Length: 108
Image (cartoon, rainbow, N blue to C red; front, side):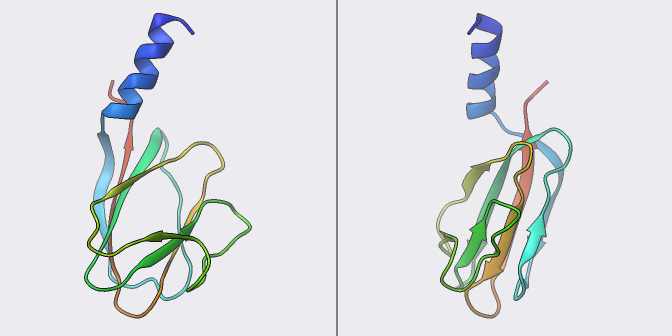
């Protein structure tokens, strides 16, 4: 790996360039799909309130109340790396989840 490639990898790992607007979902009682916009390499996401949210990253698996990775409510935001073919599907474990997210990419 050359120095330019190494710098790009480090820049992507430690920097956050927002893409699009901050979004808040107040309901995802059915599996909700988030598709990355052009240029996105990560998704910053957090569940707040009192409800955990489940997510999956492939096109075939829908999250359920007991299947998928867990975003624990009121934990700090997590960063999910996204690349070609990644589809983020979300589902609240019970009613009234609040989910905030922001897509991000490489700084110019």
